[in-house]
Length: 417
Image 1 (cartoon, rainbow, N blue to C red):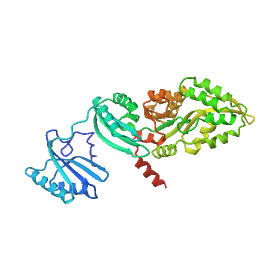
Image 2: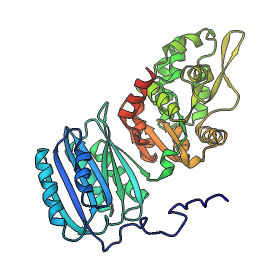
Image 3: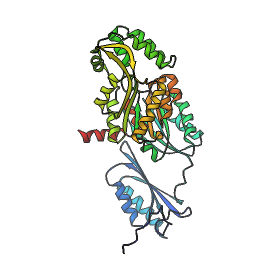
């Protein structure tokens, strides 16, 4: 007969040795701080091990070569606390460190209901901005449980773990302050779902690439200024997108089809675009694009960048020349949201675990349908309506909103080199 399998603590009643620390059990908070060097953490716990204490919690932070190490441990057997204190202080002095030991009861106090992750992007991030953000969190009833730097360049990205307030209320409060301060803020609910966002869908023109593709075509037709004016009005939401598309494409009638290759060569990727896509793919994300532009360009981008999905309008070409018309399904504002849902279904990803990125009014339905909608260097109407906004010209900063650090990106790149 096979031996019975042990039950996981989550599936069975607690037994001796697996109970959480009761609220009335005496504990000691041991704090060590000073110049960082190898062996500090091992040395502290080797010192504590002589007193048969249990570890309840550990926190360690290193900033510019200075370490703060905190250990919450159970009280030692009766009569040994004084000896423990003296030994820890003696060890700390031998390491040219400082020690502080505080008596207390039980574990850390439970975190409040409602947990969120608030990411701030600053270029630079000022002390004033940080103070205002922290104060806004407090006003919502939230508590800052932890602060962690995600990146120091090309922007400073810092993540606040917040408890005690609902995500939507926190997002609203911080969005207001971010707009005043000129920093970018993203607030998402904490939990496993954040790391399960497995589909990212982007707009193309002025998002994945720096250009408006139809204006590149228009430059070859000698009507760039006229097309640019209509494009800008459409992106601001002042014109119906489909009508503006047909009006602009009509101006391209008669162009030789060879212009397609010329336009492809003129397309400029947004800084950070390759890093964003490469990193997401390494993490197992699927990545797609939807565009009010043209398949003649998006199909090329799909192949070059290894995208999983791509959909756009198609310029009609007859007898080697552009007819001034588009064929097939029109990718407009509603179409982008519809394609996001289609891509998510094909990828097997719940819509709540998708990320959409765009800059124009025709991206709004897609941004609002996604689990996280990011307005990237967007028009005012889009910034106001999206979940969050990024206003620095580096597309890979979106990684920080997903909790991915610059160090992790660089480490992955080094392994591939």
